[in-house]
Image (cartoon, rainbow, N blue to C red):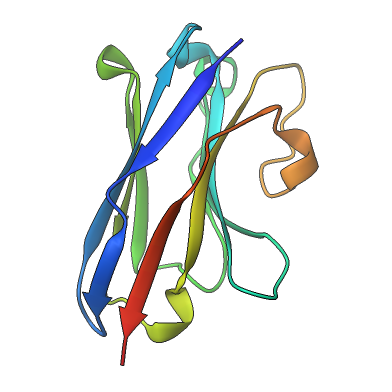
Length: 128
């Protein structure tokens, strides 16, 4: 059982930057494929970025089309922490951001149903 806890959300201006963190506990962090999703008010949950664990260690990181070139996902397995570096923020990036974890023989990176463990979310608000 893995517990996930996000932090780093807050208020940013258009064009600004934020870094989200997700600390994992209760499992071997490096074994988990990790992702960030977000959900804006009144909208469906959207895939943001995914990064493989050791099972898929040769695989690249993946990004949703709306954040490519602006966001970067990374992980520090020694610190049990997942990051999302967000640059060139836009008002449409306003959402609750969730980190998610899974482990197994398949990895549907951009599908929320593929992830077994979820954090409680952190709010990101970008002002225009």
